[in-house]
Image (cartoon, rainbow, N blue to C red; front, side, top):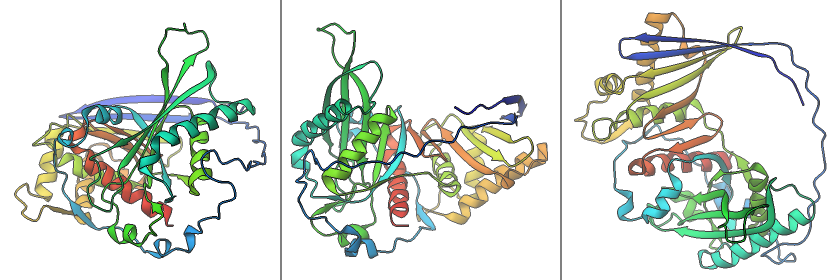
Length: 375
């Protein structure tokens, strides 16, 4: 294992209604042991799909040739009581947890009517892999119960496929026989307001659920992805966000403040200084909204937000910061944005804090997943 010496100096500064937290890191020398490269052998057993079935050749289909454009404007976030169309118990599974994002290519011959069968196949696959010596999770027995559930109502268009939620349960080694299994892993695949041209271009045998959110041990995430790749001829990749996406979320969430108190707007930057400087910038929500309203008036009739307005909003926040601390935040990288409505990080981690605005967040993340998948 590598070793790292880290020194941190924290400065907490209050100015009016704005709180600033500076974290300065001084890193000493580090000696890292190179990771050993191990070849991965793929066994032929399919656990749910015939191992002699012909490959799909998705990358030769018209769906792959569709060009997605990065939007320069989008609708303002609108509140909707999502529990009017989605089971509240299902929504409760999605909010408050932190999710790690991935993208996934279209699933070949995936059927929402076969979820019970998929539950059995994935459970058998995990148990078989553990018997083969694959590390699953210390402290849990070989018995795993997998449940696939269709989350109806999150789809916004006729082209969107319904969300699928996956839950894995297991018992601790020393649990009593009467003890209920514990949830050890959760994940879900979704598509909300996916690009209609792209979705319509897919062949009938493909289902697009490009956004994959997971919460739990990485070992189980790896096994779940491996099973999906074997069963549905798809591929996964990590989904990191970029600073433009974080800027959009900061503006969209701030615009919600009059109808839903966002409580705070917290932005985190990483600056390329010596030693490295991390800046956490927490703004009073009313101050943030007044700045946003001066750029995009609340009485705006078209209901759309332009990227130039988002850039002006962020420039305003950065200018205010420079006026008092003489630090150019624009020289660094925005790495995290958070409000009471949710949070998003550059490394692809998100948290949903309020279900009333879940559609806005999932629409943007679906867009990110599709764009990443096709690049």
